[in-house]
Image (cartoon, rainbow, N blue to C red; front, side):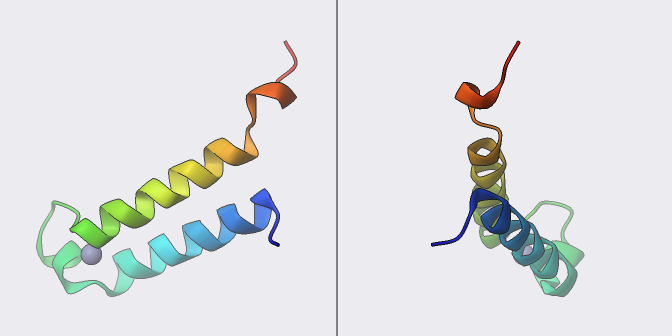
Length: 57
Ligand SMILES: [Zn+2]
């Protein structure tokens, strides 16, 4: 099982690689469906890493 930090880095790497290589993301200024999907995974991973119960105020 991967840690939240690993998942976050992997999600970001996958997203950035897609943006770099996807023709539609380059051609169009609007991100394609795959890009949105990957960005959502990335945001979820980021949220999972910054858990509310670990935020001490
Ligand atoms: Zn794309």
